[in-house]
Amino acid sequence: MKKSILLTIDVEDWFQVENFKQWISFSSWGTREVRVEQNTHRILDLFDSFKEQQIHATFFVLGWIAQRFPDLVKEIDKRGHEVASHGYNHILCSLESNEKLKNDLTDSKKLLEDITGSPIHGYRAPNFSISTETLKVIEECGYLYDSSFNSFSMNKRYGSLDLCQNCKKGIVYQISNSFFEIPISNLSLRYLKTDLPWGGGGYFRLYPLSLFKKGIQSILQNEEAYLFYMHPWEVDPEQPKVDEASFFYKFRHYMNLDKTEIRLKKLISDFRNQEFITCREIIKNKTSL
Image (cartoon, rainbow, N blue to C red; front, top):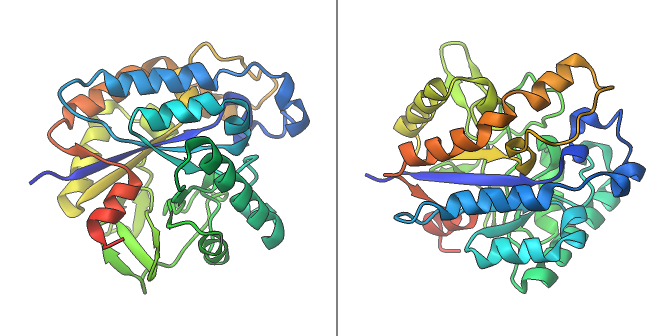
């Protein structure tokens, strides 16, 4: 039986990542070399290179990017992928008041809807900074789903949710009659009562590809779908270097950037017998919405 793989792309640029914020101020963003457009096109072209299989992915686009590159948003939509929101200025939800968070959520949603001419259904919080309270605000702002919960507990920027009381349909949790959570896929070690980070990003670049694929296979043995995430800057080894950053953050950011594109193509090829669908599609498949 075919299972589903959800490829999700957080569309932000190299100078907008949380690990570099203490060295790169928001006020300097406008002076930085913008590389997100070319890098997103590389990913789009990679998906299109699979002629015998349709690859549908979800692109969580930062409002700051969408405002400056509306044609990029249109191109994502034109190529058959889902456009969703990654907020406006990549501020952690945990650092915003409810009022400012509502403005961020509604402004980014409206901007993307104006560009695409279609409803925007999904949201992903910067650095997975989700909480039960934040989830309520996201629903109030008219989103159909959130995809921000990362169960890996050792990253303190990640938020937390208790989904035990919610109805689970595959990997989708029903929060209310018309609102859902689609968590990042991690590898559960039940005997240790912990989860290993297996959803993508830096972990996709850190683990050997053969091991990473085995982890996905293990997840798919227990679940009907697997959700993967990455960023356009992760296929760009030529991006500017933030030399003043700490060794730890530079290691996390620059590790194996030259291998990511090849690994992604191999990953899709090796799981070609599965279906690659969007977050909106998996909710539609699991519900009547």
